[in-house]
Amino acid sequence: MSWLASIGRFAGFCFAVARANAFRMPPPGRTIEEAYRIGVQSLPVLLTISVFVGTNLSLQGYNAFQPMGGQRLVGMFVALAGVRELAPIIAAAMVAAKAGTEMASQIAVMRTREQIDALEVMAVNPLWWLVTPRLLGIILVMPALTILAIFTTIAASWLVATAQLGLNGTDFLDYVRGSIHARDLVACEIKGMLFGVVICLVSCYCGFQSSKGPEGVGQATNAAVVVSSVTCVSLNFLISQVLYGG
Image (tube, rainbow, N blue to C red):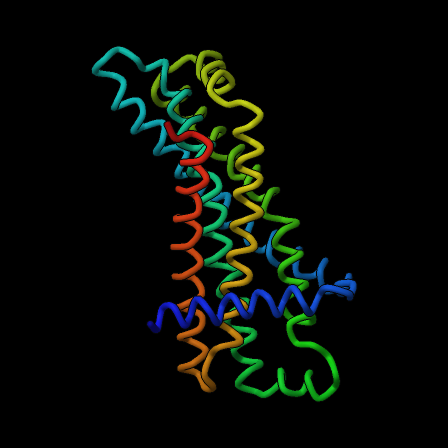
């Protein structure tokens, strides 16, 4: 029952956010600021993780196909596993760990300091002022972060495949191009935007629902990254099942 109650409160929060923005333009300056903060500040850790994921994909693919004499198929393995599935999840996980926790902690601290109550006293809707810029900002940058994760993963995989494993770089790229189609990239972009919406709404909700004090801030931050990560992974499976399921 507590889980059902939490889901109901979260649904009510999402409805309140939609209602707060129904007839008002979002704050343009804050939207750009949040987009920069979410996108640029998450970029270093995202690129670092993507590089090592790409290198591991080449190594594991090579070890899997070598006994069957299919080393040339490493490019196909990297494309199917990295582009279709791992790149969107990597982007979502890094943004949840970096930006999502920051959203939850900032709003939770504002709750502790009663700054949210001060916004209401000044006739400023806290959902419009605090949630909307973050939501629009993350929707703007998540597709770009996903594409960068895809490019970095493939580039790192290609480098390891050619420099360390001795594979033909042209064959590698040919298999990548032959395995990835336009709908795969569109699906990745859609996943990125949906994951961004989930991360923002869950993180902001945890911040608004936090209890006062340092313990409440810590609990809200932890809940934000755990719930958003699990939700994104589950949503990724559902989308992949619809697109690629038998």
